[in-house]
Image 1 (cartoon, rainbow, N blue to C red):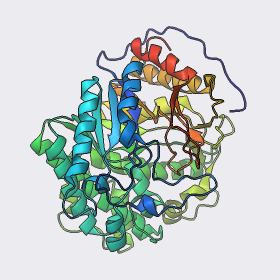
Image 2 (cartoon, rainbow, N blue to C red):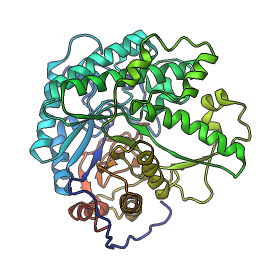
Image 3 (cartoon, rainbow, N blue to C red):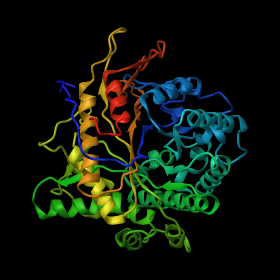
Amino acid sequence: MKSLIIAEVYMSNTTLRKDFLWGNSVSSMQTEGAYNEGGKGPSVYDLIEPGEHRSDWKVATDDYHRYAEDFDLMKDLGMNCYRFQISWSRVQPDGEGEFNEEGIQFYSDFIDGLIERGIEPMICLYHFDMPLALAQKYHGFMDRHVVDAFVRYGQEMIDRFGDKVKYWLTFNEQNLYSTPTAPTYAGALDTPGTLENILTITHHVMLAHARVAKYLHEQTSNEIGGMLAYTEIYPATSKPEDNFYTEQINQFYNYNLLDAFTGRGYVPAFLNIIAQNNFDIIKPGDLAIVQDQYNDFMPFSYYRSTTLSAEKVQDLADLLTNADDYFQDNPNLKTTEWNWQIDPLGFRNIIVKIWNRYRKPIFPIENGIGVIEEWNGKDEIQDDYRIKYHRDHLQALKDAVAIDGVDVIGYLGWGLIDILSSQGDMRKRYGVVYVNRTNHDLRDLKRMPKKSYHWLQKVIASNGEIL
């Protein structure tokens, strides 16, 4: 960051629930490493070559071997919840054959380690790392065979861990499968982001979620949520066209799945665009499957907001296949080094909108700021900018509770122990704990608390009263 803003500690009268969940979210490929250990099969991430600002995924932060150390740091922070991801190819190497007992035992021990420290585990079943065999054989979620394979995998994990784990997610940031980059997330190798492919993947992933969610409710008393990557989108100007297409993109990126997650089914426009283009996507019985399930809570990630200009938008199909071309920076907001715009009020607005529309408990499970940081080997990193980011977003959350009357379950930061970014870039650090490695030098992988660690410790100890 170009400048540091010193955070003042202050008190607030806002009261969060006594059982509020404070914690951390990660994915397996960004943390575990051990890419060829314990019977793990390859995933699509093993095809990615390192680059100037991109590591490979072979070691990550070596959590496979070091998770106990990281759990101890979480306990010391006072965290009582951890959202992690099961690597599909670690427990089922080819995604459709026999299950790998060594991989399943790893996660059983992993979960036990959390519970022993008083940390509530939350399982995410899929975070973009499709087993390579399914990607090569079927093009991932382009094929209904992979829907069936995912359901079998999800049901097996529920059978194995349902007695230990209360909170479940199917897909990380499921609305990303409704964007032009959907094939990348869906393991659909070399598949273009055409309108038909986007809509196909959107529906197939929703079918997989619905079937697993229904199974969990039938077999357990646990809770599950379909998750969005929620970016608040504003009209770039007061022109009616900007507002109209902003609502259109919100409808397809957010409300289509939120409605489906809560048993309402898809928004009519989603079904209409499929029918009008004569796409053979919806099969008999599909819509009943989509409606025959529900979210227990509403999880989402939030990092930023943006604006949309409709000046060059041709029609809805153009918007859905080229959306990134129409997003513009908001001149009223500050940005990070990665040009992600910082907008705590947008965070509050999303919390309130979801609550008012669906009246189900809200759970932000990813939030944070990625910053380029370097450790000199001895002095604590003075990350006042991270303190300010989380303080402002937590205050927005508390305002949503105290002023807007929202029921919020908890707040999970993203990668609060430094991990590889989603692009494999170790320079982009979100953590309150520094991990001593670079993109191409593993160093000693030492964990070192930053200034924000001690601040967050006090926040959690006070249940959010002291920010």
